[in-house]
Each structure stands twice: as C-alpha cells, then as structure tokens.
Length: 367
Image 1: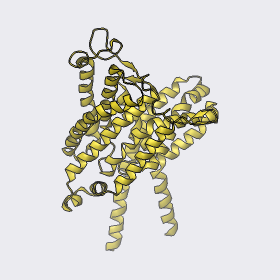
Image 2 (image 1 turned 90 degrees about the horizontal axis):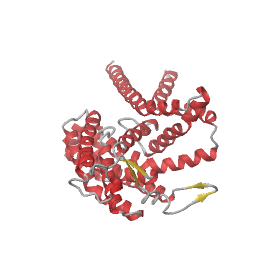
Image 3 (image 1 turned 135 degrees about the vertical axis):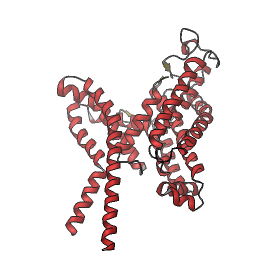
Image 4 (image 1 turned 180 degrees about the horizontal axis):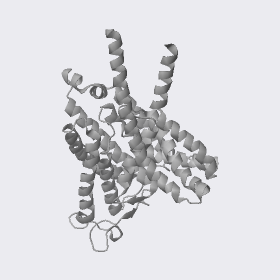
C-alpha cells in the first residue's frame, strides 16, 4: 500500500512538471549542438529575462482570481503601443518619454480592461476562449484607429510615422528616442556582460507588489473566488466586481510590460507586436510549470529562461542537425502554440484524474 502511494506521488509530480522537464531535456540536447559560448547565453538570458518578465508577471492576478490565462492581455499591449506612437510623434525621448507613454496608455488600458472584465463575467467558465476572441475584436478596432484614424482624426505631425497616402501609421516605428532608456538607467558591467539593473529593480518591485497584494483583503477575496465562486458569493464577496478588478489590473500591468519590452527592442511593429507578446508570455508561463489554476513567481522566471533559451539555441541546433537554421524558426512557432495546447490538455486530464481519485476516496469512506 505504501509503495503504491509513493508511486502515485511520483506519477503526480512528473505529470505536474511534465512541460518543464521536457524543456530541460531539450535544452540539454540543443545547447551543445548550437555551439554558443556560456558567456553569450548568459548575456542573452539576462537581456531576455529583463525584457519579458514584466509581461509574464501580469498574467498571475487573473489566475489567482480563477479566471485562467488572460489572453486578453493583448488589450493592454495595444494601449501601451498607442502611448508609444504618440510620444514618438511628440519627440519626447528618454525616461520622460517612456513615463509619458505609460501615463497616456493607463486610462486606455483601464477602459479596455473594464470591457474585458465585463464580457468575461458573462462567460463564466469560458474565460480563456472568450478573452482570446475578444482580443481579435479589439485588435480590429485598434487597427482601424491606427490605420485610418491617425493622421485623419488624430493629428500626426511627423511625416516618417505616416504612410505615403497621408494617414495611417507605418508598419515599423523606430523607438530610438527611448531605446534602452530604462535598461541603461543604472549602468552595470560584469566583465564583458551588461546587466540591465534598473529593469531588474522594476521587476523586483513588481514581484514584491504581487506578494503584498496576495495578502491584502482584495487579494484574499480573489483567492476565495478562484477556489469556489459560489462559496465566495455566499460569504458576501462581490464576485463580479472583484473579477473585473483582476482583469483591469492585469491589463494595465500588461500595458506597462509592453512598453518595457519595446524600449528594449527599440523598434515597434505597429500591427503585430502585441499579438506576439501575448502568445509568447502565456507560453513562457506554462513552460515554467504553471497551470490554468495555479501559477507562482517562480514559474514565471523558470518559464522565461527555458522558453527563450530554446529560442536562442534552436536555429543553430537545427542548422547543425540538418543544415537548415529555418528549423529553429518553425520550432518557435510550434512551441508557442503547441505548448499551450499540451498544457491545457494536461490540465483537463489532471482534473479528470483528481475527480476520479476523489470518487474512489468517497467510496472507500462509505465502505
């Protein structure tokens, strides 16, 4: 009986951590094949963790509230991009430009988050697919505003931002004015490696905020709603209002995360950057061992490292294996979409097994 319990615990541990284990094994194979030096990989990981962690951390609060993976985080990313377009037109550069972009984008993100939360309250139990489709809908409105409104209804003074027809924003925008303005705010060198210390301090402050928030009354209410919505409602917790607040907070944080992401890149793809940010952030969180129902700060950083490590080494590993670096590009697309499907399937299977285990224990007690 004891051996059976140990075997079951090991099986559950392996199932819970199946995705991180797979990626650790893939990395162990791909890193030697890629031929990259440890110094290069460490520098890349420091840069990518600083660039992407804030976006991934913005997903934690809706999971705490039982709303699953917030595919609607792209709404916040769109708001951040609108702020960046406007400060590029106004020629506000450096850290003041970045802060102004965040200030402009915040009310837009709050409004979009309120819309998303209201819609998701109408689709309880189907939040993830609803937020995914809502992202497509708002993306259409965003592209309508950027492609036709800016330059016509919203004045844009800089000719290099506008399409040749006289209105609509170009596909790529140079963010040279704010490029690395946060990353280089506190310069730090370790040997030949540059450490974006200021960005890491912002991320650390965000992690402390999440830990503090979970202990507040609002955070405890979200946790109660995530565990059982009906019980939380019976206890007098305003379920729908709290769920809307969770989505608004996540959307605003995703807005700030997208601004941090793009100041590191230095170039903005006007019509596609937000789509990539949302899908890659969710894939990274799942690769770190998170599930639809539970995610921690540790899952965020483990996932970002494993996900982006494979992004760095897979093209060269593919070239060494079959002579085609393009294999790595295909692998990136496969990973970002495939890992979400695998994680959701594992979550559904695990829930079914938990229900079967609960029924067996009840039958045993009755006997």
